[in-house]
Amino acid sequence: MEALIKKALKRSEKKGDIKMVKWQINYERCIHCRRCITACLAGVFQEKDGQVFLNKEMVCIDCLHCAAACPEEAVTFAKENGSNKTVFSHDAFEEESSLSKVKFRSIETHLVNRRSYRNFQSAAVPREEIEYALDIASWAPSAKNEHPARWMVLEGREKLDRIMEHIISYVRETGISPEIDRLYQRGKNIVMGKAETIIIGYADTSATNPCIDTVLGLYSAELVLQSRGIGTCWSGYLIDMCNDVPVIRDMLKIPQGNKVYGVLLVGYTEDEEYVNVPNRLKRAEIEWI
Ligand SMILES: Cc1cc2nc3c(=O)[nH]c(=O)nc-3n(C[C@H](O)[C@H](O)[C@H](O)COP(=O)(O)O)c2cc1C
Ligand code: SF4
Ligand code: SF4
Image (cartoon, rainbow, N blue to C red; front, side, top):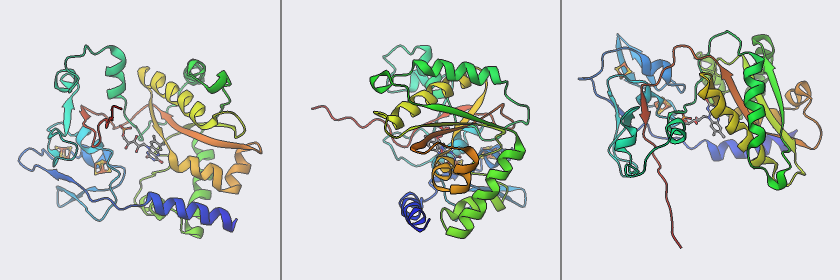
């Protein structure tokens, strides 16, 4: 257990680099609709005396959902990636992209419009939708065509609340990822959002390439689900917790010699709509040799 904690702490230290909030609110444009507050999982956007403001003491994860959600383009960032654009309108992305000479096909449009959703309705996603998406995932590429990934689907608030309780106890006891508890106290769940359905992808570690194979399959399923109007979000925190917290591993009955490589939150979205395509802070860096 101690070795596990050490490993996890090391990883969370590595991951925990504090990031400066780079955004600004243009108050001449802001209409106080509060969409950025809902969209910001990290609690950076807050409200005081009817005014939206940036709490720069919170840790921003650079997702740019604030800018994607703002209907007035009032959230802007200073140049970071060689472009001064914070967002593209959905329609304008094709023309404004540096790839404007390339005719976009529907796949590109779908790829740039995919978003991570974390606010979900309590209405369950029909099992057939998930089965369909995971079945299509069988066509993802896989080393030696092994397709080692196995899928487990967790359904229902009660079960997920129980897992969340174990996670909160674990982070309090170990001091690992303290931001999980901090945000949880503020009503933000960075591990599960408001999901009532979660897909877990795991595989035998002795497969040729279990991590990449699982991720490719789950990403394929994510794209299928979003194309069918179902919101999704990856949960790296839950991947770690499934692997590192013995009581959760036991609850889920992850077989010996297997590891969880992908976790996807799934649900019909609520109060979460993105009207823009956020620019990326990092765009392709390519070396031609
Ligand atoms: C491997 C991986 C792990 C992630 N883990 C989490 C997580 O634990 N919690 C969360 O809310 N979002 C998580 N995300 C979502 C990212 O924060 C999100 O993809 C990123 O901010 C960009 O936003 P977008 O997906 O809407 O473009 C994860 C994404 C990936 C690919
Ligand atoms: S980039 Fe994401 S985490 Fe950072 S302030 Fe915007 S919505 Fe919040
Ligand atoms: S989403 Fe935009 S317009 Fe709405 S409150 Fe936030 S900054 Fe202001």
